[in-house]
Picture 1 (cartoon, rainbow, N blue to C red):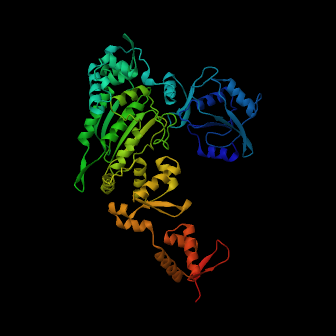
Picture 2: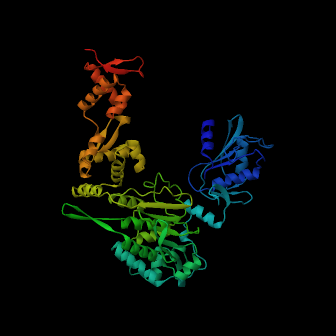
Picture 3: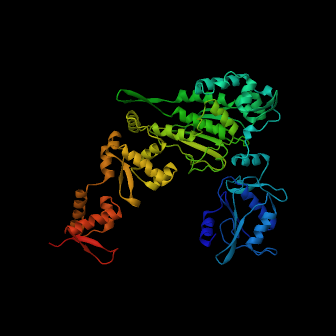
Amino acid sequence: MNPEALRKLIDTGETQAVEFKGEERTPLNDRTLVEAVVCLANRSGSDTGWLLVGVEDDGRITGARQRHDHGTDPDRLAALIAARTRPSLSVRVYTVTLNGVPVLAIEVPPQRVPVATSEGVFLRRALGGDGRPACLPMDAAAMQSLQADRGLLDPSAQVVAAAGWHDLDPLEFERFRRSVRERRGRSDESLLDLPDLELAKALGVVDANGQVRGVRLAALLLFGKEDALRRLVPTHEVAFQALRGLEVETNDFFRWPLLRVMEEIEVRIRARNRERELMVGLLRVGVPDYAERALREALANALIHRDYQRLGAVHFQWHADHIEISNPGGLPEGVRLDNLLVTAPRPRNPLLADAFKRAGIVERTARGIDTIFYEQLRNGRPAPSYARSDATTVVVVIPGGEANLDFVRLLVTEAQSGRVLGLDELLILNALWQERTLATDAAARLIQKPEADARATFRHLVEAGLVEERGQKKGRTWHLSAAAYRALGDRAAYVRQHGFEPLQQEQMVLQYVRKHGSISRGEAADLCRLGPMQAYRLLKRLETEGKIARTGGSTKGVRYAMASK
């Protein structure tokens, strides 16, 4: 930690991972300091936490005060924190001078298990009632949620003490078997002939040895009777809402078993989902408002990954131009917006997730996110967005509106030629259609993979005749090919993006010089849409041919005028 890094942290303000503790009015006692460290250790997320002592809540740097026993000695302060936390926390303490006063920067690494003070106080870093990060008491439910986020506990596998076998509905077991038959074919046929109890045991949702000794949360969510769910799982609720601006057309709430909820909402999707017909040669292609497979995966993800310790419903909201699906509980530990597409699957409720896979509702590969993105893009619409998700809620927005039918036609034509494009190719093609040009580093961020993978994807698209490159090395960019623009019904766009042929570039430079007297490398680059080095080579060639001559002194001040005859 150095002054520049510390100032950057302070300028960002307090977050879930950064807390300010000022001592302008009252010195910070050891107990409060240790509790603040414990609070940061029990935060959601895998980033490093920082406690900055000597910084006020408004970001003013007032400095940390001397303490009689350990002063601002980093080693002694780290030892104090280790001695007064359970399990013992190993932190790093830095003393950094800013504005002429010392600031204590305490680095709190991510923890796998909940941490308490030596007095048994559990606190967690979360959003307070005012929407700002705060230290809140950590009750048993919050502790379970934290352990589930970190993959240490499966809430859906917990036995519900008051539940019994009589709380499960035989009709829901039959619904599960029907789902296996209709969605999965013969791959899970071993489940079809099992009696209800044996089926529950095969799924691991009951604790039984001869007789049922315990019913797990997953059993209630999958097979529970409606009155049992209301009584034993009061946090479970699913809402289907159809909204038109500020008007609510439909506002239904369900406390049904999950497979029944899935079937009900799928029926409503089919009733509302329109489909346009696209002819590609003699092939008829249906382009729906929303891909049913993508919506099913998104809804199933919300039900599987929701935090059943938190109050709040899973919401399925059908707006005029998009669908929004949200669920209580933030992204699991290690999953971020910038690695959604590539991180290993980490279900919050593994037992429940496994049952959904065996019922054929979600992908066995556990790559449901990929399916949501792929189905959306192949239907000629923008990619889904998880940008509104936070530490307490996951929100996916699936855009609707008019589909880009020319983009769909292009993909169908490629498939007919034996070239089936993957998700990375679709993401890049869609971005090129929207943005016109794309640099390699931007493409790597888009597909959430290293630049080497982005370049490999571009090469594949170049070989397919869909993309062309422009420039060299760091100045290299990519754009759609003439064939791609032709297929997309925008022939002129290729000329605009591809730029001008060398002879055209020469004539444009000469005409500019005749009119304005001289030209710089930057002006030539802007005029011809070239990179700096490409513009330099163009001007150098014209100079060698005797058409222009260099004027000016320093390198930065070099200009070119018409050569004397």
